Length: 276
Ligand SMILES: [Zn+2]
Image (cartoon, rainbow, N blue to C red; front, side, top):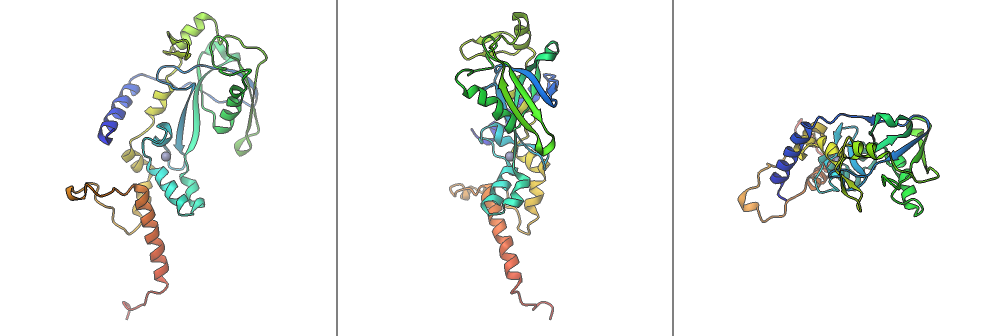
């Protein structure tokens, strides 16, 4: 898809979603064990979760993670260029962090309805390990699925998550509750629902994603790149250059870094002719 069409699509989607009045009802696991029920995908969600990426230091959502790499991300490009250049320590500040949005019910707060849980990789893997066990499988099935006992221990960087299935499968809620939470059933076999009070988390996550250019500006990565003395290439491609292979931003970063290294090295042997 050409970039302009993608941008239009993203803009239209963002304006639609911003008019949907999506409220945030995020759930943060307390210390100790909490019994939760994961709800099935609704609306445009492909899975029961929606993966999202964020560049925490740059305070921007990553357009690349949510689209499985289809949309380019300038911050990821800096991260990759630094990694490829062997500057892994400097690269760390640009690495995308991953979270997984999912609709859940907290059993002891069931009357409060659907909440959004955004576990990181560790808690997500703990939950997913239950699904890898054929005895449990699709634990988010609203009729035959299984509740999860999620345990949080420690805090900060030492936080540990473990997840265990409860003993017996059970419906996620009464028929009335299921209708309220999940709306009209779309496809029983795929367990895909239209969504009642459960949010379409794919749309919700996409709402926070900016275009490549906006991400470039907001993240400050453009300024980082322009810190080099090298002038940016003009954006517009000249007609006679059309057939030439386009350098990716990652290529440009690599070239700039190589030039910077060259400048540092050559400065040691530069003769002080200008002063005399
Ligand atoms: Zn990124």
